Image (spheres, rainbow over the protein chains, first blue to last red):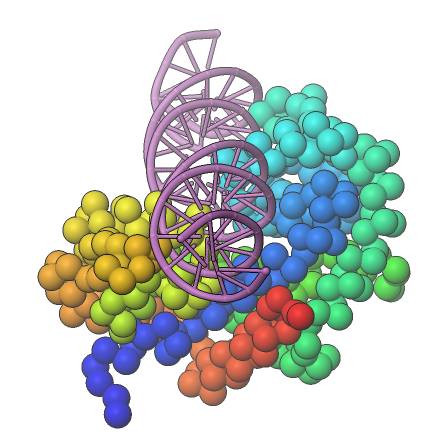
Length: 147
Length: 147
DNA sequence: CACAATTAAATTGTCAACAATTTAATTGTA
DNA sequence: TACAATTAAATTGTTGACAATTTAATTGTG
């Protein structure tokens, strides 16, 4: 019961579950982030800043795999919410340095409950999560730009 | 060497690899789809139509997990490219019926090589792919709207 | 039958993703 | 030192994603 078009069926492709699942998980974050006026992308940007304290747009883009076309407007929004500051580096004015404001820093403690709440929505065992992580990583390696 | 903020690190979350990997895979499709003037979302829409021949927007949205706000403009674009037709159902004019045009149907054979080419970018064994599929499916179940 | 409730698609508005281009600062080199 | 090449961020333009609302058709019920 198989024909040559089977490979063109949605359910036979890995790409679609990946795409749908990613959207589904992102959507799940919304209610937890909304009280802080953050979108998912803004949230992961803040996650990097909670680790780094200070970073330029280029490095931030490498961590998040986003370019300046996405980040510039997003960072302006985070600045408007007073979570971050944006200033040119003194030694090289091409670099825009992103720093947490006190408000942004304070948010970190509030946000501790987000991953906790999210993990309740993730019906995977510890081992399954680790395996999923490994497989995504491997897939990522293979799909990123090659020489 | 762990503190209470570890859970707020990007690399300790499943959500980020999922999000990044999905974007990476989608990006990989671009060069294969560009010759046919299709985006990834337009491509998966065509995949449903190659299976169904005829479907209304609501059902299409359920298959693709997209709403009319996303689909309406996308379907108008596919219509403009002459891959699909859009007509109201005679028995219930609320329903918009999407059908393949001959051009859209013909595209199916051309597109057979897309999954083939893509699979070369997917560095997973058969078993790994199956396991990834299973895990994504399980995660999907858990993250979709609950009662 | 009338009209409220429901349903399907379209519309509106906001944010994201990303290619391609532009602007401005810095670096390398003839 | 001039000036070409490179680099970082911003800008422009297109497409998607989705919440919320609107429009129009159909269904259910008093």
